[in-house]
Length: 399
Figure 1 (spheres, rainbow, N blue to C red):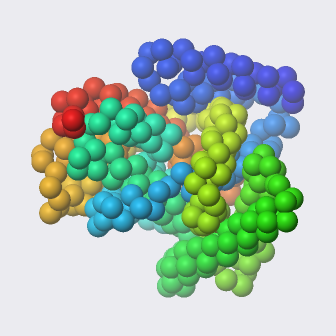
Figure 2: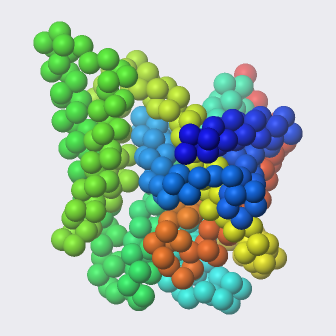
């Protein structure tokens, strides 16, 4: 296993660096590393690490959601208002609708399986979008109309919305059919997840404050370990309660992080976010390399043309969703076009949950994973290059 980990980190980082020099997202290099090292090409990874791959990917997802929660500025949502709130769910809903309508005939899957696939593909990638929006804010491009803030806030919430839908659709697919209760469980899962996470976050912040008041200083590194431990526990609670009531563990994790950010001193929450960012450096490599390793390249190539067609149809629907969100805003046509381009890239969520249907034993598991990987390989470079090459032409530089 140690040899496999050495290959994952060293080759993964080397490939990421090479790809980055080509002005493409690092994650593409990590995915290619996994495909090459995986069992379907060179077969250099130990079966023991592949057997716990799904658990490692879930840990990586928790880390990025904690970082998102601790970085998410709710005031940005309030400042931008309606468009930001709509951007957090409308484009994703349109993309899922595209899969629901077209995937059964194009990819020969059932409607429920199409919903599972749509919920995997529908999330925008914070790993690609957020750093670029931060750069635009620093360089004062589009900031007068809060365009980077709008995209960043919407993208952060978009992931959470999609993940909650994915867990619901995946459980429906396991049952083989959809029942009314499955749809009723969606708002229940969201509300209970938010409440559970908010209460946990409040109690944790109260514990940190109490310790500080009694001069028992809890180091930020220790806080990270405690928060991680509580996140794993929240995920376990979702499993414990699944026969009684539906609770979104992932939404609880984000909600907990948001409350900790609100209750903590800004400097402390920033340091915690930075520390989770450093953890993400390692988790990111594990996540994308292991996702690449799970891909049967032969199956992906056979799915090729039709899968690519479905991805582009979904992107058209997504862009229509973005356009609807921006109705009655002061943005001009060029700025609206930029928002559509910025909402194209996919990576993080697709890597984290793309192989879950396969691990669950769903019949659509292999095709979902193949389309998810193709989606990353197509849209991550497309979105990243699109943002980098167009922002100076489409956005106004503020003085």
